[in-house]
Image: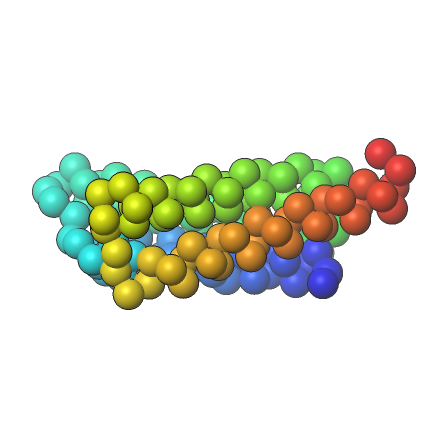
Length: 131
């Protein structure tokens, strides 16, 4: 699969979640964890999460047109780290405190698939460039 498609899929997925967190932060937390945010501070932090995801989505969308750049490789590495951490946190939410909404496993699988895709893209790029 192409790097361009990886970056577009990431941009759309993270952009959608980012908008949800930014506009209605209780909705994605209900879907992912089965619970609403508790208090004003939690909602503000949720909106910060939304802003960060939107920024990630914009970066991925823009870099999808420059797939051979070293900057793109750096972005894919950053997305790989994010996807691994997100998958671990979603797994912890389920196996630790037992939080689970209807979308938790979808989110976990989405992040695992993207992490594998990022790793494969970085490996393929390294083999192609000899670096």
